[in-house]
Image (cartoon, rainbow, N blue to C red):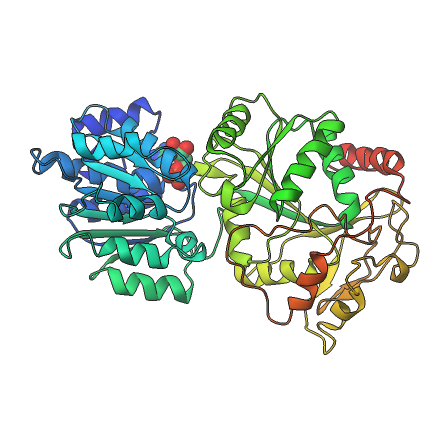
Length: 491
Ligand code: AMP
């Protein structure tokens, strides 16, 4: 179905043609007509499905057809992060370039002056993160009393980041009679409760089963000891000649450290996370998009909403301890119907996270180990929980060093090892595990409110404990060359 059949006006059709879109994506095909009919819409779509245009195009059309003589904004788009706010705003500008509508983007970390002036001059569309918008409202510098359309983008993440109270306060400034559009990649009970409280008789638009991920993303996971991860990543990047990889770490400190380490391996890398200034974040993102650096190392919050065209690889250097984050992370690749690959490194402390992810995905992620000969072998999983589900957390004793239990596990090739921990049994797989944690990721958790799998608090604490220095006892060069051989032969 061409865009013209969706009921969009010619200026918008021309704008999408200029962006190179031939046909509407499934969510656009279904959401645009419903929004044009002024219905509330709940969209279950992960990022990368074209959801921004799905709400922005009809929103622009409705605004272009209604009252032009109002200085107050008539549409409000709330997003969880500055990056997403910037991107959504840019899309709105691109799509609406032939319409006489004014838009502005509001987020923290920058001066108030230009934002206050934008409201004073008059604006039709405001794209904002909740915190700064609330500040402006409380200072009396923003007026939302003429809002006709409210969009909650990535609602699940906004709730996850604890924005619910800010959003509720903002909604007190918005008229009750309005059109509501809510988009969420995942659909937890929390999101359902929230959407029930806001939406009126919504049209449900879902492009794939909830909590599923883009089918074009090829996923695989590797059992790899925490201290072997860096060598494994460097080798994969070198061997595969990867030019653009988004790598996720769980902590800001871990992101910084990994970026520095990769530089030492002759891989250009920058980190992006919440402790970086807005300008540093924008610089890193621009360098990555322009292919001036190979690797962007990101935490979950910072990476949220990043739209990087044709991103081919996402690596979960550490698995997220909230399974939904996995979906968001790997949704960075395989966007708009393009192929992508997501690779996860699973250390001995993360096995249960993978299990949680598989439960959420309702499918198994192929899991491999590299044996001492550098061979890649698929690992069979017994996913039945055992009575000793969390027994291992006690054994960690805060050091995180399991080498004394691993029977030769400090060998870079790993040695054969049947791991039985975290309620999962890796039956009959060779396992590359040097034991112990890198120690680089201790300390700061990302800003996201974390929901841990029950019973994992001990483990969580031990993961936050500094451990020994990184590569002692390993033979990175041997390991790397074996892995190189493997990867060049095996793919
Ligand atoms: P989103 O899910 O909104 O983040 O969009 C993901 C990517 O898909 C963005 O780079 C958009 O520019 C692109 N995109 C959106 N709609 C289409 C379309 N109909 N055809 C091709 N690409 C699209």
